[in-house]
Amino acid sequence: MRAVVNNTVLSNFANVRRADLVRQSFGDLVATTDVLAELKAGERLHRLPICDWSWLKAIALTKDERAHAEQLRKTVDAGEASCLAVASARSLVFLTDDRDARRLARLNKIAISGTLGILQSLVDDQHLNLDEANRLLAEMIAKGYRSPVRSLQELDK
Image 1 (cartoon, one colour):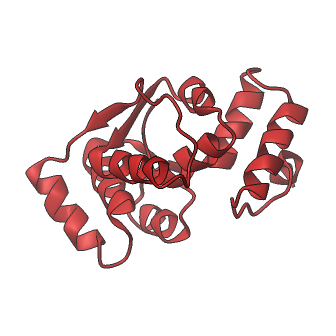
Image 2 (cartoon, rainbow, N blue to C red; image 1 turned 90 degrees about the horizontal axis):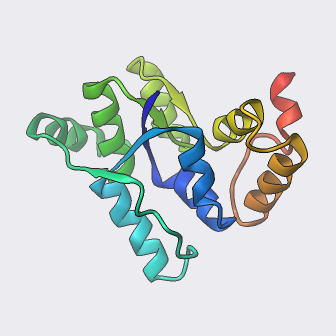
């Protein structure tokens, strides 16, 4: 499954120093140059640990995608806007935890997932067991992730 990832998701996995897990969950994953700029700025400012993202393919927006992203900037930040424009134009899944971006994605019929979806996928595919995934989730929450659940078991309810 092809997906474009936002900085909110990348930051959660960076904060627990497990960038590798994002790669395992989605084989064909891209990030816009806007998202990678946000990520690198977070690292430079010491808001995020430095991780190896060299495997993450950077994509530039086309002229039409850039115009769409500029319209979306009225509602969301540059990273979210660029991802929404790319996901819409290229029929990609959009990985984000940003509430406004998720709302816009649903309105535009863009498939979405996020940190919780990645963790659940890693459990389903047996890359992590449930205890490991919940431990990572707890660590992400402790580092600032505003998760709607405290454990993946709550997703089944």
